Amino acid sequence: MKTIRDITISGKRVFIRVDFNVPLDKQQQITDDSRIRAALPTIAYAREKGAKLILASHLGRPKGKPAAEFSLSPVARRLGDLLDADVKMAEDCVGGAVAHLISGIQPGDVTLLENLRFHSQEQENDDAFAQSLAALCDVYINDAFAVSHRANASVVAITKFAPTSGAGFLLEKEINYIKKAMADPRRPLAAVVGGAKVSSKLAALHNMLQHVDTVIVGGAMANTFLKFMGYAVGQSKIEEDLVAAAGDVIKKASEKGVRFYLPVDLVVAPEPDAKAPAKIVPAQEIPTDWMALDIGPATALLFREALQDARTVVWNGPMGMFEIDAFSRGTTSMAASVAAAHALTIVGGGDTDAAVHMAGETDRISFISTGGGAFLEMLEGKTLPAIVALEAVEEKAP
Image (tube, rainbow, N blue to C red):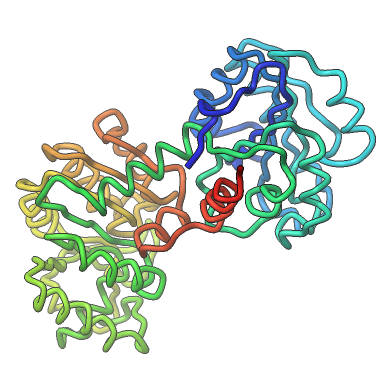
């Protein structure tokens, strides 16, 4: 796959699709700028090479029309601070005024277009909209891994119209790390899978069983597996229609010689509330009117021991309802266990990323992916639509 370093960009208008979908508080202040920081290497490289930068992103879900609370203006200000440079904020992402603004930019200048999702055509992968975006540039660069699993105009259709297309450093890094983990890992390879739903992770589990040596399952999704094992799960969240499918995963793991770990004890409460009474019980003894909301200390120790010999660890999904302090210890313990592993460690998914930050373990993780859905689709063995688009353009090049 061609990257920005393979393209002559000096003096060129370079359109970089970034992912600046950052969280904002009620005062429109950015509460976490890690996604902006993740794009800085590509932006800095393009500026050093004398490119004229046009940055584009979405923010939130504005439903195809302008809304002040979804403006990228706060991002422009924060990016300017990080670059110690003036970042021009466009009033839209297409149209005559935007074209006029772009016509005046100089090498090293940075212009941020307004929210792409102010136009419904973005998520419709509309050719005409993509053509309008492509008309702004000489070179198109995709550096937005987190949206590369979506067939959107700014990551897929635009490649048909941009004169030259390639990947940014972040996209390249994301793809390479995940491919390295799944295709050519240092072994043993362990996968830690958590979160709320088996349904969202089932395809990934089946694919990972073709590659991994160890699977650890936690979070609410573990309840469905425990139900298959014949345990009473009380009022715990389960997916009744997937109990048999969970059993198939366990059987497949056994057939392939994959070590498969489930919780042996759990933190339970009558309801998912910070003020609710909580206690630790064996996994097979959840009270009838209580629900599992976190893994227990014996499970945390078991999972830690399961990772001790791993040389590659991939983690997606928290071990419990970590947003509530009483049910956060399993997830923070897992973050510490992954960080302590003598292994290449890769963490993906918004909740998992947040958990690692909360646990203060970010510096000890080899790589934290910026993608949630994109990360999961790669674990499922899929090729992302945006990658397919870039590779298709490369194949057509003379």
